[in-house]
Image 1 (tube, rainbow, N blue to C red):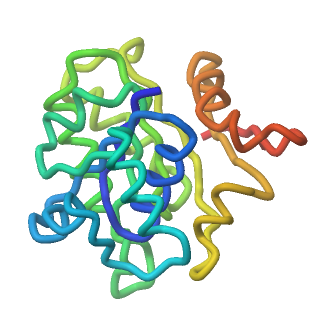
Image 2 (cartoon, rainbow, N blue to C red):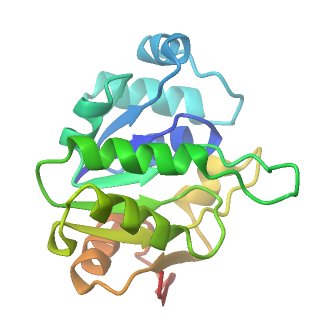
Length: 200
């Protein structure tokens, strides 16, 4: 499957590498030009066991690419993951400016139907905000689905946590989006049903 991931921080980079490693065609997008330039030559900015060789192997195989070109990222992925930072505001709530900025970027560039997957750590209701941004750009409901898919990663074992998850949470009211998400995660769900379904 063709997947784009916006954000090459801890969550986005590990997610991208692991999805590429099971055969998906992944493009990671970031606004940090220096970080993207380093990743393009296989230099991983975080220390996580097994991550750097996985990134390098999947780059060599052509399944994992990095870019600063947001339009290219939107065009590439049938599924687009939001994996940008949500640092706490002064009052402790999550700062959603980066998530909402990516939603606007997707809305500006999308020309085909997309499944937009919230992977960032966000509060309940963020899916509705993303949907409202897309609608505000004139995109009809039949052109997109928004899915919640929270991450459960531990530093030091993030690669293994994604390769061997205890559970895979999919929040969506769309049968089409759920089936696509199940197909995406099928390589990680072979031994038992790890998928937990709920609404957005």
